[in-house]
Image 1: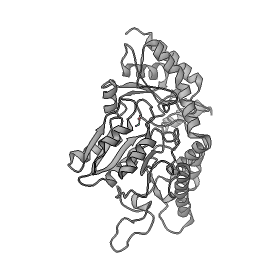
Image 2: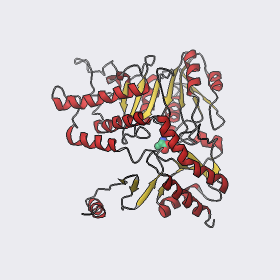
Image 3: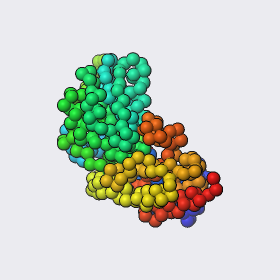
Image 4: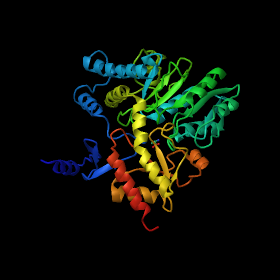
Length: 415
Ligand code: ALA
């Protein structure tokens, strides 16, 4: 049976094999070649080691880790603990038990925000945040639990001094992104961290877009809570994430239920010790196996090398956009950005461009405000947003060449 026949049979059986991979190329469900440039939403394809780890686990190690003494269960628990150990080594944490397995970046951020804030606390955040930071904080403010100050940036970067000025005696938490998911610009986290630590507040860093592209060393930068998405540039599958809980942070459980560690048998309560205090329910063992392989792959390659590869791929797109009079959103520069580029088309709608890219050229890019409304307002791209282009490490220069040709053709269309 050839590949197309297998695909047809799979689809006929009711399974949709989105995005088959062959080398660096992807194919969509119909088996047509596809260029995937939405890695800021989730990375695809993954390194081969990730596919292998998931398949091996699915076939031979997919037990529930909390089921007592049998070896199959212990093996699943070992896998979870091994992944925590690797995260701790790669990010320089203060112990594997401080790494909580979560289901995505949003889960990590909600766990941190809902878990540390109390009545009458004050929070400092910025206008560059994703909804995963903004929404839980706004909800707590609306419920009368907390007050907040949103520090305004220039749309590109936050001035650490503005963070300093926004701090109050009752500021319990500063929540800030490390790289904007709209412009790709990297924020001055080291400076912010020093200011926040001096003030005695907790620092929560949303590293959804930066982890895997910007080196983060918790033993050097005083970050109390580090929220990771597992499925972006750490190359786990969707349904993975992690939260690092530093020793200064006391996080109340966000979900409660069956977990590891010692709970009281008389009155069933969540155990007090990390990481089990913050985990509950059957974990995503399969996902964690993939994430662990992804983190190992990133560590071997080095985050800065990955970032440089991605921004280099984007350079010809920036050059073409500037020449064609399409707006490059934000102060995009190879040294200052992760592999994300936002464009505003000239004389064309954002959605029309992404649809034409997808339907006519089979290129996947993302339209809209990317769940970062205040940043779009600040940069004047609301409400339509931008065409966001985010390659991955398996994207080729040839594929980017095809994107530029497609953009040229769309730009040349009659309005
Ligand atoms: N928050 C992810 C993004 O920026 C999904 O695309």
